[in-house]
Length: 397
Image (cartoon, rainbow, N blue to C red):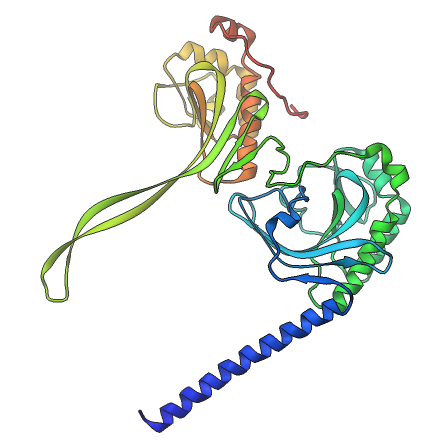
């Protein structure tokens, strides 16, 4: 081998070793800086260590990962955890460093972000509430939100933001959660002391009437305490009597194909193709005649008196009279307002035409089933000789 090439290879190897050594030394210094503050560092924490959090960004997605956990207490004695948290598959992607402060009592969900923020956290379902013009606030109860965000708490949040920290906070059961914690130990210490000031300002006596029982730790789904994860991506829930299941159906097929090899001869080989299909369906405790709204095959296409509705939706059924009784003018207005995914009902199954496996979309389908059947007139149920269950209605509907 040419001596010049040997020298180049040795130089490259030495450079690689130098980079590796630099990264190892930097890592060791980082860990020493954390432990020197009396904190605990865990390079590969288990996902179970953070499953006592349930509000977004937690409780979303099918793939959830946690990395590099730091724990300890602030100078004021507030226990904290800091960790990298990522979610994907089945919702918006999230990958940020999280700081979680222990609170003296478990409280309902509350979300606070700077009014200048582009958007609230993905998955947040709570109602916007006016508390302070500097912040976007979301919670289920305006009285609770105003009690939680007392003057001392708002002052502590303002101090946190004025120090250059990104205001994206939430109360999640017994935790005050902040998105965007820095990694540098010095910056992190400043961040945690400021965030600890927010936690200390929360008044447990005033908030005692709002104490709640958080869900048990586990791989849950935000807003759907009855949902369970079965296997990798199969979500199932009781859904108040209309059980929902959503999963990705994967299968393989094989085929023969011919090709020409390097010698010009024709050869045959077996090729394996991978396929997948997203399935979201409701199982009903009753049987229903075929009706499809933008949901594909079966039956004959029918039209309604509303041309706008006809332009937006294709309805197929085996009984046009039945379809007109189920999809009456108020239901047409509802369908045009919510623009649901296409769906097909036959027998005891309501299947949705969806192209992505998304926890929020699954929730939309689960809610829609209740809303749709809840609008079926009583005489239709009587004609079908069915006593319908109590259907859930959303507050806005």
